[in-house]
Every structure is written in structure tokens, then in C-alpha cells.
Image 1 (tube, rainbow, N blue to C red):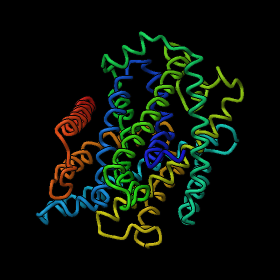
Image 2: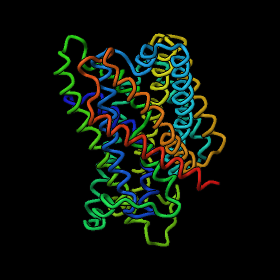
Image 3: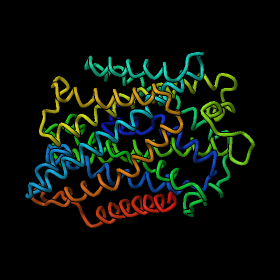
Image 4: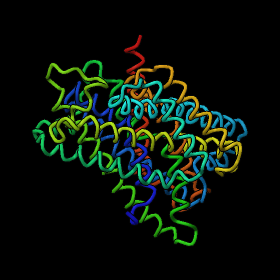
Length: 398
């Protein structure tokens, strides 16, 4: 575990209840047809997260701080600040609702208490951990639980034994079944999480201080990201596969009550308890990470200290957490809240990716470490695909 760095935290952040729910819905309703979106999102995440990490290692700045210093025009600087605050601040509030709802859904599945009550409990635990400043110790334990849940999904996938031909067709033959656009957006949004770009640029500075040569730090960071994000993609693939086997083509309806059936081939009646613990761990981990990433992004954009003890920094994460708790406790349907949050991430991604591409092409900021043509091509492809899906979705709505 010591060889892993911030990439493992990024993986733990995106393999949360959003991934479990979104990947399950994709497999349950469309079988292997949307596997191409998962492959695309993993490749996109690898490229974009490498850019974010390189920015932090070379410049010593977070993404928000870099944006503030990259524009000569006061108008564009102000616009960048506003967009970061709105997209990441408000976007993470929506995402937080899904995190808390997912964790509460796990608890409600094994207790007689309602989801909205558990949402308050989960939010209270997240608040206590963040306020104490010692959340990292607890987070390590939660990561262990997520890894356990992930191992079960991988084992279940092996037991299910998906047909290789169908799996490969889904991966390499893109298709868009009727009604699947929002699920595709959610599947991309749950893997290429916009706030992870801000989190990664800041986290690498803690792992690799300025005393480590930049070239060495970049090599280790790229290896760390490749291993961690690929593992996250494999876990998501396993969830899609097991959901397809459990639900697709059957009379069993996909819902919060039946989602744990994916694990029954391996765990039998104990599946719902194991699933509940894993979903709680995943949700609580993400419920901590999301407000923190928003606080780092907003504080950097506004020029505030990125310090957990700073009142303004604390105010940001409190607002994000509070909005998530409120939405979840008011009875927002868990599956709907989680899928909406993932789709919101998909819509936010082009905006954040465009800003990242702009910063990564500033030779005055990065010198010889600025983007090469290959990174720019992939980055532009990500923006084009996600934007195209968003436009297509809007046309469908009207």
C-alpha cells in the first residue's frame, strides 16, 4: 500500500455509491451495451488525472490557484473564479446528496429505520470526522471496507463467467440504446469526477514534496494513477457484469431493494448485509472527500488559505455537506439522487476539462512540462464526446 499515492484516494473517491448504483443500472437495463462508455471514461480519467497531477508537481499549485494566475484579463479571471465556485461548489452539493443517500440506503436495507433518518446520521458522522481534522485515520478503515466489497464483486464476476464475445462487443462497439443517454452520462461522470482533478493537483504536493526531483515524482505519480484508476475501472466493469447477469433479460426489476441480489451467487442470504456495509463505507468515504475537494477548489479560486482550520475553508465544506444532508433527509429517492449527481458530473466535466486544457498549455507556467499534442487530442475528444452527449440529451428532453 505504501507504493500507492494520491491515485488510490482518487480511486476510493470515485468508487462510491454512485459507481455501484450507476454501474448496476447500466448492467441491469442495458446488459453489456454500455461497456464502451466505461472504457472511454477510464482512458479519459487516466489522461485528465495525469494532467492534474503534473500541474501540482511542476508548479506547486492547485488547479484553482493555477487558473487564477493564468489569465491576464480581469474579466476572464473573474469568470474562471465564478465557474469554479458554481460548478464545483454546487456540483459537489448535488454529488454529496448522492453520497449520503447511498450510505443511508445501505443502512436502511438492514434496519427498520427510514432512509431520511439514516441520512442525518451519516451526515452527522461525516461532519464529526471533518470537524475533528482526523478523518484520514477513519478513511483508511473505510477504504479497507470498499476494497473488501470490490473483491467480492470481482469474485462474483468470475463466478458469473460472462460471455467473452458479448463483453468485447460492448467494449469496442459503441451503441446508444433508447433511453440510455443519461445513464451513459452518469457512467462517465462517476469515473471522470470533476472534483477529483482539483483534489489530485493538491494531494500530489503532500506525497511528493519539492525535495523530490520533478522527473522522479512524475514517473511515480503516473504509475500510481495508472494502477489505481485501472483497478477502479476493473471494479466498475465487475459491477456492470454482475448486474447484467442478475437483472438483464429477467423479470426482476432493478431498484434499491433488489440491488444487493448481485452478490447472492457468492454470499447467499448474507449478501444484503455485506452490501449494506460496503455501500455505507463507500458512501461515507465519498461524503468526506467531496466537501473537502470543494473546499480546496473554492478556497483556491477565491485566494483563501487551503487550511482545514481556516474559517472560510470550513464554511465551504459545511455548506456542501449541509446541502447534501438536507436533500437526502427530505426524502429524495436514493437511486434518483445518485444518478442525478453522476449525470451532473458528466455535464460539469467539459467545463472543467476545458479549463484544465487551457492551464496545461501555458508554457509560462509549466515550461517544458506543458501538454504535448497527444494529451491535447485526448482532452479535446473527452470534451467533444461529453458535450455531444449532453446536447443530444437536451434535444431528447424537448
